[in-house]
Length: 433
Ligand code: AVJ
Ligand code: FE
Image (cartoon, rainbow, N blue to C red):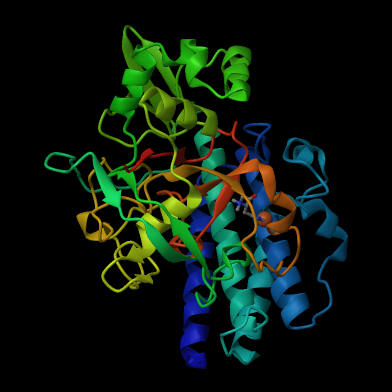
């Protein structure tokens, strides 16, 4: 088992990094904006803040340390299943100053618990997992809050340095991923969530996968070829969505004087042709792939491309190997507030030469969100299990918006196929042979 002091240090680092990001996202706008609803799809930012504290209270202070509730009366306000997002602004939520105080109070106590609790690692029931789960949960809400920032109007509130350059020049358009069995999922990754478990064998036939995510430039060709006007490219429900909402481009794009512009975090700019396309629904990704004579990869194909090393025959933690991500491997952690151009991050490529599998944009897959054989819900059914079924599609690989604690080769995200506000793009595949 791992050294308990190392487990403690890892938990402390992850919790501290998450809270620093939460601080940036909740202090870069004023109190009025924190309590406003910027979109019916999202909570007010102040809801996320107190929900982060409330989950930490429930899972670290009460479940791990056996403490009594600090404020039992607020639990139901911050229960995501009791109140849909659109209704949250009408609840008697904690005001910004109160929410900050509450989250800080919980954190102070959680760090005391961390100091006193023996950590062993290993099974999910060990406290080491609970700390990792809470750090991930906060980072997931930091991504949710970043989506809210993207949806708000008004001048920019967040800034970040540009991502590294990249080019597809000299790269093949697609890569052959060999067929055969591989190990999908994990039974050993310490902070992997219930839906990533257990490790099991899957057989995938040989297929070709795009070397990089589909770019805005390629997606523009689909638009200009009348992609949004032809039913034959679309799944029936996708075509209905296009008609009902009169869609003609990704979310946040608009045309002006013959030029496509895109608004991002309060700044409008020309659509960059070499950047992975972002803010497309599953239906748009699926339609583009059909138009291109290709298809979306299945979730198993995506994971094989990202983790399988044909030399050792082993599945690794990341495309580049087992080492934790560094800024040279992938665009993660809101370090940059946009994807890097296609072809960036050569150090992060897979053994077969697939680039940008981790970070930059979440990638829609063809697959429904379903449990792996042997799935056991932990710590509660509402984390993953209640979402299993054909209505949610799986996204893989994480985006610039996701921290590395909430992203790995086995990590599974899911959403409805109509969703466009998430930081989602895609890449395409085709059968070999
Ligand atoms: C895994 C991103 C779909 O935001 O609904 C946050 C993560 N779960 N709080 C979501 C989550 C509970 C979840 N996603
Ligand atoms: Fe949550």
